[in-house]
Length: 498
Image: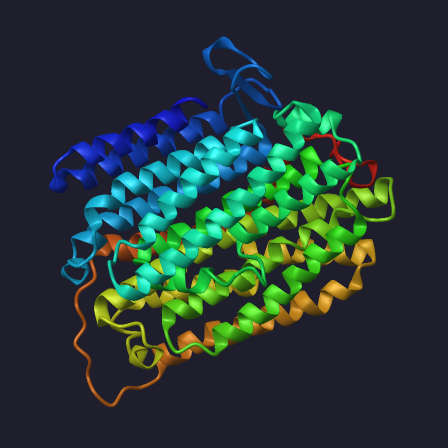
């Protein structure tokens, strides 16, 4: 199954490249459905194993390439498969519409399936050099997707994105080189056992983390994100915001907790948390100031990314034992719930905004007046996604922020409470800004182009997924336990449920 979830999207990309244009959408959607089904079979396969392993060609590590899937991998695979499949359903009719005739949609399916295959391969890889190669594939496909509109603003944004992505990748690769020179091993598990507190190792740790922070667009390294996400076609914006930045965040989790658990410090974790806190406030402030709908949602992504980095200070504390294990569990669950719910909600929001742009031909906020009764499902989707981003019950965002707040209180790190609360209030500000324009009366009637039902239904389904995550917390906890006892984590942050 781990081989198939990589082979199917890559094969689908090649088939879509060779097929006539009118058939590419059907082939791409078939590959998307097959990939999604295979991921679900892998995730729910019986056997009771904590971690699945598969040595390609029969050569295990450290000589060969070995694939592995633990609970964290499976969570990210499931997140990617559900979100990607619904985006694929949206993409077909979206690129067939007259509004998108200037978009180079004939490249979409090949690039999209290459990116999806890269994501799946990254999540089951156990070698940091292979992870670098896959991150390069993901970044190049993402940059190419950003240019599909073939407009000046989109090309400039894509060039800036390319420069940032290449810088992040090269810095990360330099860190990999330091590690290989020091230990002669590239396997995650082998490095986790051998890593010691030496100058080359600390240098490698700093370089690899910095490279992934650029790719994740954490404040103040977010300079490339708003323009890239705001000028891409709607399904591409959803892919970039919901899935691509999650790949580098996944790498950060592997680096921090699996390779360098003996090097991470309380001060370094607090620094990442502080950068996340500034991201929450700055991104929300910039979102409220926008006049374009897509740029508002793009700056919202900068803000919501910040919540993900509160996981790091909350999982390193000065108290060990049962009490520390309790809040560590809540911090981990809250951080992963935030990751999953943000992906679903932000994809839904970008797709709903795409529907509005499709109908109006513009994304100016002032143009949204009085469309509530004319695009009711898209407006409802924005409302549901906004509920998740604000952290209102019963959404996944509520569970995530509730868990994070519990971890903050239990660990005594009270200074994160105002950040979480103020961030939610600012989120409510830009969500109500969107809805306020939608419900405001208009003095003149605006002619709307009809929106295909598939566009509205797929966006609405993603918004419902964000709500559904709030009811699956126990499943996330169960998955997080798979393989975690094999992860060499420092005693202060080790936890396992009985």
